[in-house]
Image 1: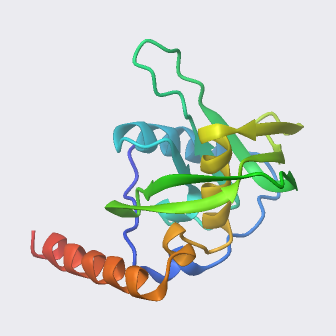
Image 2: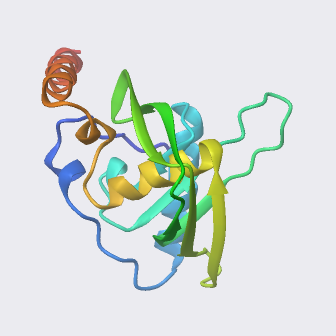
Length: 173
């Protein structure tokens, strides 16, 4: 397992749709391990493959936040939302590709998602609460969409300028 570099917005790769994964192989399993290690190290609760410059429809997540709780890592390959609730929820979202920036985003409160696991089997599960917000946020990444795309233009531009400044500072070391 290895930590991967997380792309910081603005980066054109974060705005591109990812390609479906055709087969689960050793490279995909290694990527899943690396993504989980990178997500936990960040620390975050979700990470999509495009955020580590891999243009695969694949995400990892673990929304278990209690210190004494057992981690519940999930790897979703080619996930798709098959049902969304009418009920909405608002969550103050952040993103590992947009560090230290948060904004309220409204999404369906519950979603049903179908995906392929590392075992190659198709799984379907209903998510609610933070898990629902997280899986929708990460699937957005696979479609080239960021949480700031839900914001008003002025707020989005302000955050983008902050990220450009951060990237310049990081480049200077």
